[in-house]
Amino acid sequence: MKKLLELRALKAQKIEDSKKLLAIATTESRSLNTNEGSQLTELRSGIESLNGQIATVELIEAEERSLIGSTQGQSSNKPSKQELRSFINASEHEQRSLSIGVSADGGHTVVPHLDKQIAKQLRENVVMLANAKNVTISTQEYKELISVGGTSTSWAGEGDTRNETNTSKLEPVTIKVGNLYAYPSATNEVIDHSDFNLEEWLTSEISEEFATALETSCWNGDGVKKPKGILITTRSADADGVRSFGEIQEVTTAASATTSFDDLITLVHTLKPAYRKNAKFFMSDSMAEKLRKIKNGDGDYIWRSAVIENQSDLLLGKIVVISDEIPANEVVFSDMNKAYTVVSHSRGNVILRDQITNPGTTKLHVNNYFGGSARDTKAVKIMKEAI
Image (cartoon, rainbow, N blue to C red):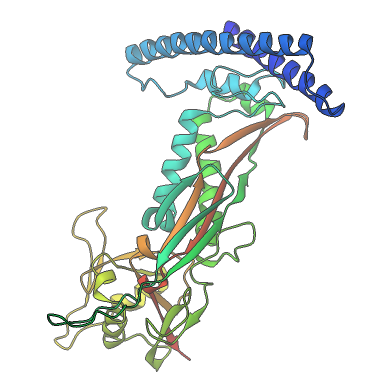
């Protein structure tokens, strides 16, 4: 570990020296002179050499941890409690072996196993991440084109004139990412003297914060520095092909403050068959309780509870997904993979250690970038109980 830290420190210094060399020429609005050019070439050569040495040492350490993990029956990529403790207690200028990237400007640290665990729990706990289209980018925004149809055809006989037919139109969707962060803390006494599972604490603290914020935004976010929620998207009573692109069709129940069996059938058939195949019902738990009590004309409950643990309940043959971010008087029926896009940043969860803000306390500032927006609004319908 000590050798790896020394190599990374040398690399960071060479990078800093290169920046200073280039900054001088830039400030004086000139090109590098012969001497400066030679220095820069030497620095670059040194950085490349250090990259090779760092990669070799990292490989050796990874293999050593793998061997240790195999003798203890543990996963080779899972950091030990002592490694996590060392990571949290590291001095301000020291990057421990759990780091896979060092920034010359102060350093951000990625803990691979924690990153994967947070991502795993997010996918399990955030309805939109589990059901929507997921895209990973390395920039600040994501763009895609959605076909809104419009192509036409015509019949012709032998020798007939072929007139030009209509062409489908494409509408752009742009999704910008915003910074989502968590800032859990623990006293140094707890870290130093308690024998609790640091990995479990980090993962649960961060995942809970991220999951709550992301789930809320994907459904009800205003789109300012966060995803724009699908429930906030403009709605219209107009059918497909009539309403404007980007608007979601809203249907209302026949009776006030009531959702009937017939209302649900209407909702299902409002969604075109091409989208209906993989569609699911999305609703709050209170709406689910209400719908579980509905019976058909033969007196049978239309709700089918799962007979095997961890399987989904069914309503009219479609999977039911619960999210309390949805109002208690609404039901969403959608192929969410076609209807909504969640954008994540490729760098994953970045962890910054803070032992300065509040002396005696270690804070972990964990941040990631997410965005979200409706994409093909023909793939989603919302039913709202009449007032």
